[in-house]
Length: 487
Ligand code: ADP
Image 1 (cartoon, helix red, strand yellow):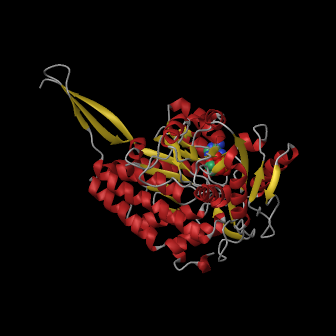
Image 2 (tube, rainbow, N blue to C red):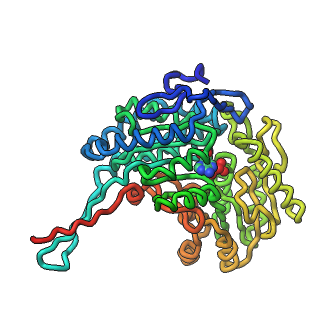
Image 3 (cartoon, rainbow, N blue to C red):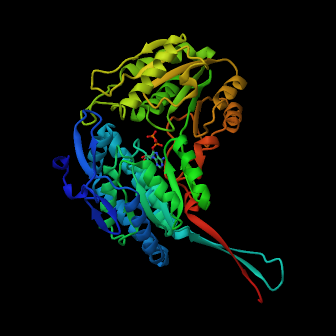
């Protein structure tokens, strides 16, 4: 991997604690990172754990107060510098990302730019953290509201967006004056290492951004939840792990931001623009090989347009090419690991055994061991696993519906509430459906909704808090009421 980088110094085989690169842990345990496209080992890293996490929290605790005391303008300038450095290294960062995660190189660079956009955004927002002066209730008193950084923040991120998920969290945290202890997914720690290196080059003080790389997510998570110096945990990953962290954090009333699983409905009404809907569904479904928490998981198509949509959609899906992310013309990378592939196969087999009809794909691809064909199933019904569970793979189940009421009920019949999409032209239908869907984010006539200026987050069991937009800074700020008496 290093030989493919213009700047190999971006990628030390180490974590970062208190400004020191940790290449070895006591006892010498290591873990390997592999390229899911071909199974090749691309890096060996020290297996850091609870001890290093505690040390990092201590370092962050010491660094945070001085960072918060700097002017907003200084913090903003550092974030802006980090943003510029990321863009200057977009090719190397994209290469690292494709190697560790498998997504096509173009998509990988897109992710890097998307993450950088949050640094730019919060470099700007950092300067607009404003308190308030409220009317007093007694003549000699005044009510002031201060906004202060919450302190040390733990961050645990997943493998599907190894670069952007971390950038999206660190940007608001650092911008408003918090310090960070981050733990990337064990499958994809390299993008985070490169970001840590760029933090160093951007001139962030030692201890402000710490990175723990290690195999044992549960142990590192426990060490974070147990330490009262850590005031907040921001997690992106499965609902199951989110629940564990919430339980573990209960002892200390740990504040949490959680971006958890989704089970997005994608609804196509009879009056929709058919071409646009098919295109939007393809983008939403197959981006990142379907391994995206906001990607269309259940596609509901109204009766009158069902056959026409299914034909168009399946035709487009058949043209998508799975393969190594560095090969030109490849649209889709591999599944992340054997478990991911097994889940996809299980969901497809379950649907077929209950009467679904296969119209595209349906089997592993010859591109490599972890690749699966872009797959489309018709006549999918509510009793199939595809209807209830997040598939996290390139499988599109097409459900048929007749009325607006019926589809809203089905779309909402899940514990998740992250993203939902629909295509329609009737204005009244657009409003009513957007209001009735119990989701944190709604795409109307579009399959792509994420951007730094919008509040990303879910309702129900999809999470707590919002990332991005002017609301995103609030997750990292405490409100302090100061009552000024004797005026
Ligand atoms: P996914 O299904 O996407 O792998 P996970 O929720 O399992 O999602 O993983 C997301 C992140 O959470 C990863 O960084 C992983 O190492 C970490 N993780 C897994 N289990 C725990 C846990 N019990 N406590 C803290 N972090 C965990």
